[in-house]
Length: 285
Image (tube, rainbow, N blue to C red):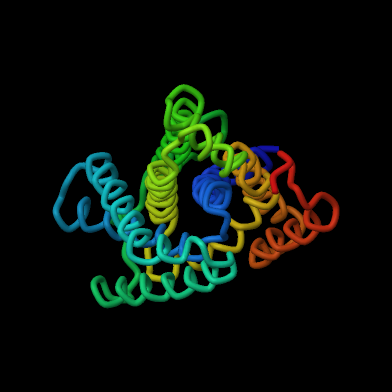
């Protein structure tokens, strides 16, 4: 039974990372109406920004994390101004293919600046915290608490700020939002900012849980899209639920199959959801 609850905890850790990544994809799709395949590499950029600030420059972890989120948001906004804004009136497939190109550019820049070696935020072995028979690594506790804080902050932003309400209105109906006087360009900018902050957090937390390398974001892109579809495309709350369900399912699957096949679980859930309920758990698009 202890092993079962230990896997539950591991599932919450990996599910938290997937949920943060899926929130960004869901926000982008809900408001900009295209699947951003550069989101995984945006996660990677955020992880490397945090590495430079926290490890190379020696800033405290949370200060480096906040500055890295800001730098990642700036990267996303500049990319939108230079590329995506000029293509916004084109068919979604043009934006999708363009996001592939942006992903390759991001990855090449990462390898050019930081190299292709594996890097870590912390050296040595961490002493686990024993709680009710479970062994919890301090970094994993940081990941769960950080993810909960960010999700709560996003909820408060969407529900109680004027910009958040405008984002929800624009996600429901773009034309109606324009008629009611909502500044849609401002909403688009905030969408990129929030999506990039969530992407940076997902990248940093993934780096804390494992290691950072130039393809780390690309490798988790399929589970992130699976979590987005599972929860309902365009629904940030669905993305949270989808990420947690997928994380738990992947970890608990190791009770029955080899851990090497955990990635296949995400793909199987994606296919099953598309067949049974294409709109996802929260009824997205």
